[in-house]
Image (cartoon, rainbow, N blue to C red; front, top):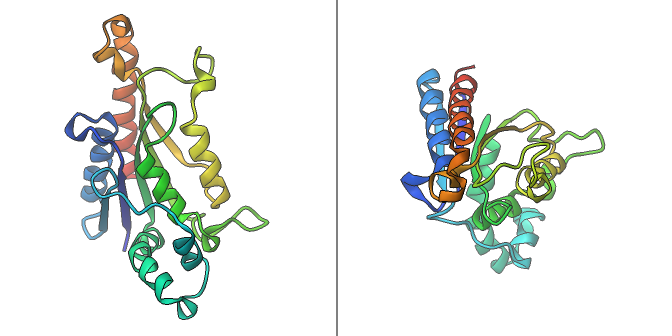
Amino acid sequence: MATLLHLDSSINGARSHSRRVTATFAQEWQRAHPGGRYLYRDLATDPPPLLDAVTNRAANTPEDSHTTEEATAWRVVKPIVEELIAADTVLIGAPMYNFTIPASLKTWLDQIAIQRFRADDTGTSRLSDKSFVIATSRGGAYGPGTPRESFDHQEPYLRSVLSTLGVPRPTFLHTEMALSLEVPDLAQFKDIFETSSRAAQQRARDLATN
C-alpha cells in the first residue's frame, strides 16, 4: 500500500504559501492513489516535544532496556518514527523564517535524526528508498546568483540533514518573493512570486501523479 506522510509547519494557516503547495500535492496524490494511506501532522499546531537527553537515549537504545523515564519519553516520539518508516513519500511544508526553517520542523528533524536512520558508509539508510518533496515559501529570492543567496539557511540545511539520513536528492518546490504581496517596496517583484508560485503548484501536481 502506497503511503504519504504529509507535514506542514507554517504558522500562517490558510494564508500560508507552503501549505497551498502541499495541499495541492496531497490532493493529487490521494486522487492518484485511491487505495493509499495518508498520514498528516501539523507541526505548527501540534509541535513535537523538544529533544532532551532522556528522549535521545530512548531513541537510540532498545525498547526492552528503557528505564521508566525513557519509556515514557519514547511513547511520545515512537509514533513520529513509525510514521516515517511507513511512508513511501514524505511531503514537507517548510516556510523560511529568519533565513531558516521553523522551530517545529527543526524539532521533528531532531526526533528522527537517530542512529537507526543514519546513512552507512555507502551513503544509504532505511530512508533511501523514500521520496522527499519539500515545498518552501520565502519572503525574498535566494536562488543562485541572487544578492541574498548566501542568506539561505533553509534549503542547504535541509539537504545537509537529509543527506546524513541517506536522502541525497530531495525535491524542492520554491515559492519566492512572497513579501512582494505585503511590502510596497517589493511590489515590483510580484512577477517573481507569481511565476514561482505557478511553477511550484504545477510541479506538485506532476510529482503527485507520477
